[in-house]
Image (cartoon, rainbow, N blue to C red; front, top):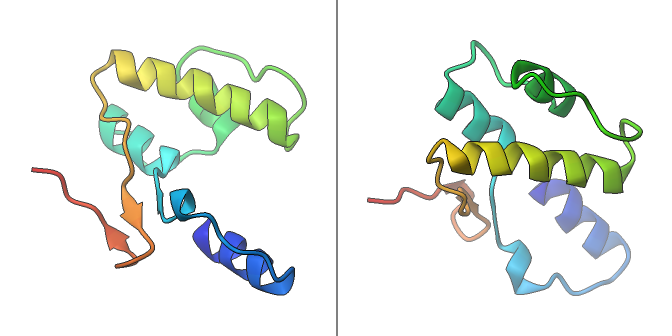
Length: 96
């Protein structure tokens, strides 16, 4: 996500707001919390949870709503919903 956002901001000559400096990778969090064999896409994560995709796949708003539904379930399972990566290090943030 970061590379795409960074490139688009440069291309369009836009300042990148600082709140985009850290982010959470839902696919990695899902994989680690639920011990899936591999990282899944949004539709497969929902299927794994016994849910169906709501809306149109690849529609940004519908994708965001469905990711929100996934995050709600992960939070109920005790998953830490906080940034995993930082643009300043381009490495995973480790919380003690």
